[in-house]
Image (cartoon, rainbow, N blue to C red; front, side):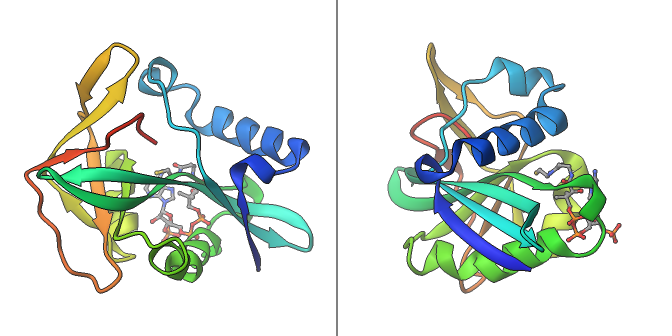
Length: 172
Ligand SMILES: CC(C)(COP(=O)(O)OP(=O)(O)OC[C@H]1O[C@@H](n2cnc3c(N)ncnc32)[C@H](O)[C@@H]1OP(=O)(O)O)[C@@H](O)C(=O)NCCC(=O)NCCS
């Protein structure tokens, strides 16, 4: 699989539309998705097979706060494998092979994702840790408390257990 990383704003319009359509199909049916203001990603990571998009995810780089201390977060969202390519290990490969970017050239201190119950074991199998932190994020009308799951990953697999996380902006 060829892996491409691109700044979100530099994606060709057709690709941006393809990613948007995939996300709409997978997540557009959830109330929380429709009713929340989301961050615009900084980066997109694409897994290509024979020139065709097979899987992708977006990444937000954000100075967040763990118990009041600034932490540069690599925030992952919208991990999607195009249905025809599912179950072949492509999403896992994309995550594992691009992890070095989050903690290397992008200088993230910690990766963070918000996910549904069903995906906890998938991400756990890739080393992510579920945390019980109180997680706050911004919305146009003020701060809100996240009610679902949050998972963290560090480069050296140190387990972080902040009591309070503030995303300091819209969630992803
Ligand atoms: C989750 C997803 C990205 C996995 O892509 P993939 O390329 O098939 O992933 P892999 O082949 O690397 O791993 C497959 C594993 O995904 C997990 N998985 C996929 N969908 C799942 C779901 N709805 N619930 C629980 N686990 C799921 C399973 O553990 C599966 O393992 P198995 O093959 O042993 O059953 C893909 O199913 C998808 O696009 N789903 C819809 C969007 C989504 O829910 N994204 C996650 C956002 S947090």
